[in-house]
Amino acid sequence: MQRKSKYVFLIVSLVLLGSIGLVAFLLRVRVDLTADKRYSLHDSFKQVLQEVEEPLEVTLFLNGSLNSGFRKLRNAVADLVTEMQVYAPIKYIEGTKEQAKKLEITPTVIHERQSDGKTVQTTVYPYAAIGYRDRLLCVPLLHNNRTISGEENLNHSIEMLEFLFAETIHTLQLPDVRKIAFLEGHGELNERDVYDLTVQLAQYFDVDRGVIDKDASVLNAYKTIIVAQPQSKFSERDKFIVDQYIMHGGSVLWLMDGVRFSSDMLAKDGYTPIIVQDMNLNDMFFRYGVRINNDLVQDMQCLPVPVDVSQGDAEPNFQPLPWTYAPLLLTSPSCPITRNVMQVKGTFASTLNAVGEDDGLAKTLLLCTSSASRITPAPGKVDLADFTSNPSAFKWSYLPVGVLVEGSFPSFFAHRMLPDSVENMLPLLKQSVETKQIFVACGSVARNDWQENMPLPVGYDRYTKMQLGNRDFLVNAVLYLAGDQALIALRNKVVSLRLINDKQAHLQRSTIQIASITLPLLLLLIIGFCFNFVHRKKYI
Image (cartoon, rainbow, N blue to C red; front, top):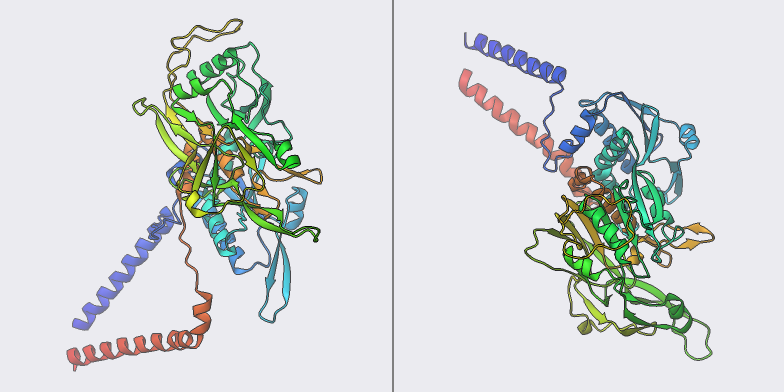
């Protein structure tokens, strides 16, 4: 009777477990028990997927013979698409190299060393194409930061998958292409100087350039405007038009220099004077809660430059020396704009301060110097021969260079006379609707170099061959200002990197192998002994 009850209990348990499994399969119930929630979609992404009205087509080109790292990336994409199919109709396709070539996708060449010492070269296409209705966008899956290891790059690429897919699908769903503009007319960076940034932003926006002139409504059609390193003063009329654009909900990315200097003189004579930079904007910025200081920061954490250290008539001997006027600006890990963005390259950066503590505006630090910095006030001089590396001279820490300001801004013209000759004015507002602005006291962060008549990525340093975080920072900043905060918040997702210690594994290889074989067998013997002991005690 006791044995019969045991069989009945076993049958009931199996039926119950099978029923639970069947229901879970039919209802597609999944429980993510991982600590970093790597298999769960962000609520913002779920909302984007639920707004999809027609089937999406996802084509993955990362196929063929792949190493373990790229297989992990491919599997992560497949898992993500499977999870996405719960919330939207999605067709998943494995693309071919021929299809990738037709889309003009640039392949990635991988060099791997095998156990016999030979190096094998493999070509892969780490991209996915997402099609919706009559539009198609390609998504780069591989994040390539030369300053970190390959495993860390792949891990960061997996972290970014959800953000990249969400951002792309959101862009495909937009009925109208949003517009942004670079302001001109004050000596700002020209099209050649911001070519790379313009190309990156063109994936999300219709990018224009133009002068403000007299029309007060000229900026109304734009989600965001960018003021990139102006060199001449803003007129009161231009200030008024920008001010009222902000009052009616517009957002601005200000990339400003705190001092004036001559790059040509520095290259020719080896030094340049630095003087106060007055764009006639300080009073307006003060009303918006920010003051850009007339100084330069020097930082021990900086880029090197080649310097000839030879003596007399000896052969030139160029050695890398730290150029403290080219700081590597730290990015805030707590803000979605700078989350997972590496250091930003800045040349001749100034400091800024948040003012007006009780103005009701939220101010978030985005960029700052390192813990070993110093300040050179204007007027002064920058000399190429100045390679001061005495740590005691760099006593300042974390000087702010970039800040995000959000809230309801007071109008600069609330109690001032309005400028003449302004046309097509909207109703004058003395307090803005909820909006946001970003202030960066370094105009050069948006400038790209050129090499052999080809543009280099913004933030790329030719001497060290490092790609810094300028491009990611600027694109994220514009997306945030244009209203994509929810999507950028997906950057907060972090997948823990759990790597094997190669050195330890090699040293303890035999021990690990023996333990891997004997411990399961030993555990099995203990379980069998305990089961046999209990069985004998109970039934014999």
